[in-house]
Length: 584
Image (cartoon, rainbow, N blue to C red; front, side, top):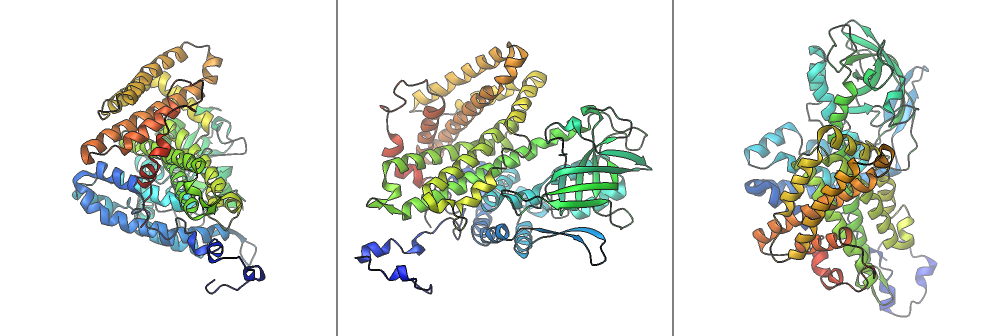
């Protein structure tokens, strides 16, 4: 038992050394302590594919990052979850200081993550010089961090690009200089926050009540934000209605609010309380009140008497697509971590005379997790690397939800232990549940799909991307390629049929339409990956993944529910899992 105290029950005669071995807890090694790059063949596959000649330069850095995220960052995440941020509302004289005190574990993790970020300007320049795509590397960085702590990812990445981009476009020069100083380490510095949601709800932004009044080249902003993530940041994008603006969506404008005024004094930003959340405890979420806060209009008209051009919210929502892909990556990170924890536990836990991973029912579930996770992985990387108008909404719709279902499956694989906070999967499930909410729930994403189709004709380039991907399928599995191509054609028919529906019915049918689009999108991308694998390595594991995914999501209804069908998930289980997780 090592250095542990021997409890009375542990002194009972178990009858044999073989029985006693079942209680050797050191056998239950999960994801923490592993190198998350080395143990992830699917990530290495994607890096080889997307980095090309720059892969040799990038791999040592990816390996270092994998060791950091799987080691110290994952350990610190657990500590922060147990000891979350706290609010010091008043100082010793009773003055409102509204200071968020972050735990030492958070600050230690943040320092290391920011120092090694693949998004910091110096790293991006080196990557480009080495011929490595910095976008692909940035996705890999987020994917690894999200397996450790999506709360930290939110704290570091909330609106950084939005703050910098809008400030550079519209703020006064001295304010631009201040923001450049804050974000010198890159957008993922933890300095930014978005403050949109009010008590009226997060989606109906036209109903917000915060207001702003012009004061020289600045504004004075008053209002109350109900759910503001990363409340300990220094630069906030806040939605408000300029005095005299229309009482509706077109009257809303984004404003920049800094924690300190231009003169160095504390700005009118007050934190009422921190939210007592289900998960993502490492990001400080709060109710924030603005009282005459110095603010700067982030829209045209900031030097005139107007309150913007009526497109402030629309312009901000365009930038939201990047945030949606970030949250999709969080969902993918939760799914990947859940898969690894489930695999590790199922291999170590013995029941009915064999490890769980040797029982057919568990093998079926693990194989399903592998396939679904790799499908989401394909969607997330393509969402970043092949920008499409419909991509962010569809990718988030699928990946954010998978994070929840995969975490739930991992809890079940652990049995009662999975429900206990000392085991890792309970936190993953708590954290994952926020991803379908952040930056728009499923219904909001579906409405965005509608806007993309009706206003931009965005289904046409989307379908063209699907045809391109399916056209790169490897030879040898013509049935799967034919099925996917057929479903692309059927999807086109479905879009046209949807466009002819009554308005109310069309809105109700948006959800199955968006799900159909995500299904075909993922299947086509897996075929494309299978084609590349065949050319690169002469192997067909990705073709197996594509076939299993297409069979589950695209095949015509089977009156036998697949009971009489092929069992490739069991017959090739070791190959399937071995290509998803590698023991060091």
